[in-house]
Length: 160
Image (cartoon, rainbow, N blue to C red):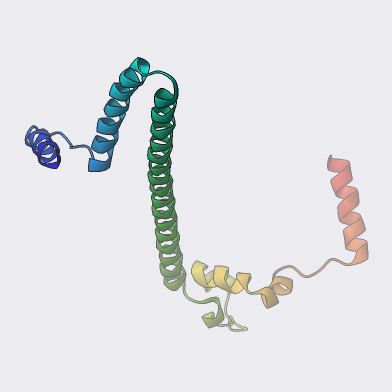
């Protein structure tokens, strides 16, 4: 039987078709044998029929459990593959961000502007990196006094 199944698989392969896995072929073969057995059971009476039915049900349950296990393993394999792909995408994105950050330079390496240097003369990348430093936020826009804040709010409310 194994030789026959192998030869059938080779024929499919030669035709450019994918051969079925052996476990699926055996499952189909077993299923066909169960169909033949049901005909045999129909001819039996009483205890003999009942005994054959119980045996067939037990065998069918074992076969179904094996099929479910195979399906479960396939699902797990797919989940692992998806997780590996997700991790690879994260690694690729991290590398891209690291390259981008390296091309902009490190924020800690940004020199302080010279006191006599005009802001317009500083390169944009340096301005952006310098402005991102938390200690420079107050230097960019000093906090409002209470009077300035009230005046701003009055102007805002009038405009809206």
